[in-house]
Amino acid sequence: MAAGLPTTTPNTSPAREIHFCSDSRFFVKSTDSAMTEGKWGLDTVDLSKNCLTIAACKDPECPLEWHRDKEVKLPLPESGKGLLPESESRRTWFRCLIKDVDNAANYRWYEMTFFTQWDIPGHCRVLCIDMPDRFLYDLQAILAGSSFEPRDPFSMHIAIFDQVVKLYDRSVWRLRDSIRRIERNRHIAGPDFEGMNDMSRHSSHIAEVLEVTIRTLGSIQEQQSPIYEGLPFVLDKTYKAQTREYVKFQLQIITNLLQRLKSNHERLKSEISAAYNMIVMQDSSAMKSIAFLTMLFLPATFVAAVFSTTFFEFDERAALKSNERA
Image 1 (cartoon, rainbow, N blue to C red):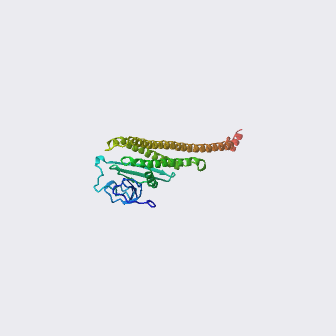
Image 2: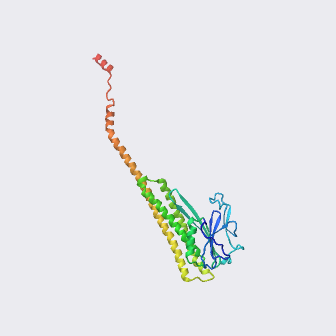
Image 3: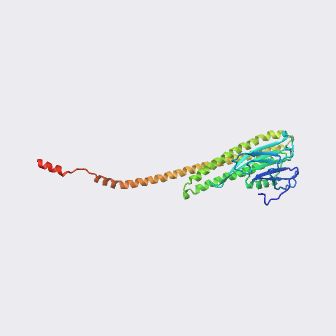
């Protein structure tokens, strides 16, 4: 995953770091404290070399083999504490689930988990777990080409949610493309009830995770103002206003994607209803054919049945006895 990318050795006091966890490795990305060169690189870090435990999975049914019975930890100073007192340190922990649907049968879940730590102005760390392949490279491109305010505890959240929004947008529109294929192939291959039921299930799952992400981002938005007010320094008012508006913009995009998904779900329900109606029409045509054949052959059958019925009983012995008496 790190092949072909330049590597740099992290400085003793990096300005920002992003840790990508995949299989049994961290992918660490850092710049110097001055951030003048803007060079970003990748290094792999063993999970066992750390100071602070972030999460531990003891579930024997855990699907992630590297995560089972292992402690996922974030490197910190040797003291095991932040660079600031606990009251001045800011940490967040949140998850964003992504269901990437290729078609009705092929899909993949990404249980993206983020841990952020902001200690002092200019020192921010982010641990990212279970990322799609493109997440690392796209996030690297954003951070390399954008302005970064190290004094803002939410500066990394904005870049992260930019990528999360892109993944959700891709997930919603790929689901729409699958529904469109079902609509176009309706008259060619006939109704695919199994595929449509799978797509309906995917749509419900994506809607659920979008609603949860909206609440997560809404909670982060609610914490912006009190955290800004509690900082030991003052951020520019224009910067704070722009940051709040941008988070609101990200929240609105995810909300719009949820509405787009609901529209897709209604299209899918209409397609399922149309498929059932087509089957009913086919059954109706078959019943009409059966009724026509019945009406065609029924008169002849009726006449044959009538003339095959015995109306009189003729007994020759009874007739002879009547003649003798006469």
